[in-house]
Figure (cartoon, rainbow over the protein chains, first blue to last red):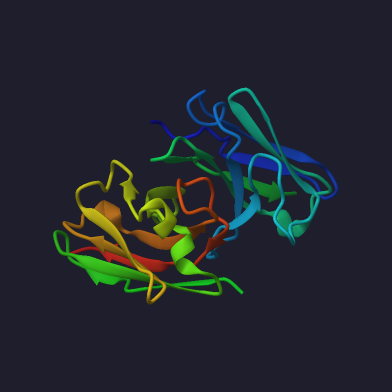
Length: 110
Length: 123
């Protein structure tokens, strides 16, 4: 199975909103409500930001939200802040034996 | 507090073997599936594989790129997950992360990650 498709980069000014997409197929993103999003700052481990498409773990600001339509999931960051500048990855459950990863999106806060 | 600490990384020659450990604390280790994810220098995340928790039989699944060369195991009495890497190739050079799956079965998502350990395969 191919990796999930993410745009390589995204950007926005402080206070603005940015949406990052993650496109798969009916066998992964479209077939299950198990899309998750991770934030990774340089030299750091990934951090779970969104799970099961729309849910936020405790401690993640409500500026981060997730959604899905068909085979495409999205992460929206509202009220951009400087500390949101990082790489973001989507991951989708793809059946009991597999997880598919997106290629990552570098978010730049202008 | 959930903590995952990887160890065992280092420099290894192509064709040789290396075994990584992931020591867990702060939760009932045996109840959860554990996964390994790697990241080559300057590249994105890549799933390596996972091992189901005891309630789901402790079975394993692997990415095609490592199947037959890498083996994931676990010692629930010590709260440690292992990644045995054989026949290493230069393209296996990466930071290796262990991550917890908040279920005993399939790789739904990963709620806690270790800090990673660097494996460099080079002659």
